[in-house]
Length: 303
Image 1 (cartoon, rainbow, N blue to C red):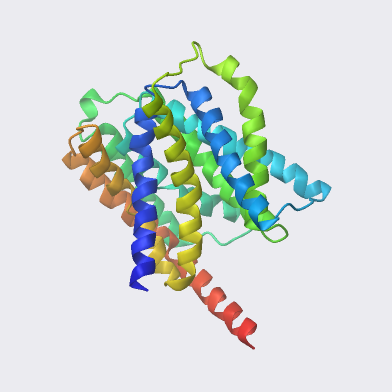
Image 2: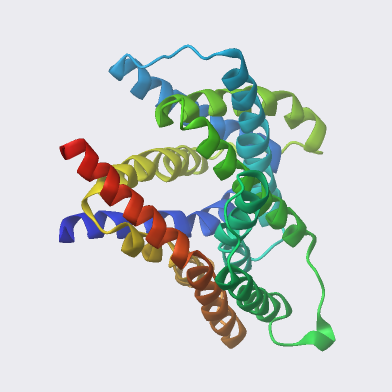
């Protein structure tokens, strides 16, 4: 179990560092081109895995439509808005705002999946919003200015929440690898023409080290880390693993300090505690319920 927790912590470090990685990459590649290239390498990885497992499934018409929507909203727009945000937005602030995705997902689930919206979720949302206020204003409302990148990171958060809801709907009929592969193929295909529409000008470095960094982060962040997480999550307590994922903003802070020499402010630390606390409070009931359902399901399988 200790080994599994170490692997899960590795995934959290990788995902938290992705905000800083993205900030570095958008200095060398324009956002739409970077999105398209990253999706290309992710698709190549997923196709390699699917070919190795001989795992190509047919979809019915309704699932195919959902996959297309998922690929456009949950993959392409989500990825592009992430890099568009990091052109100007601070990576730590972006990580902290994106950390509130579970709250928005809970609200969407209440609206579209008829799941219960609890008092804990409402209170947790208010606490998290207080944290975002501290982070965005940096404790100084007098000189407060909204960076345009923050708008795009909010779009990233919304599309990420939509992706979770749509994936949940599809997962009752389609396996995760098929959903991930086909939605990324759609996202990549859609991204190609928008490189020439959204990027003005198109920026692309010729430095081999930057290309290696792009490929490595695409494969490790969206491929290897996800596979490691899915493999090891079965061996640990689900609620504890979820708490680990809330450490991503703190990882982004430390990585930003090391790689970008960006100091960690008191407002960011205070805001991060409010945000993570609000998210934990909002999702604790859902985590407990999912854990109980998992225990019941495992018991039925053993019988």
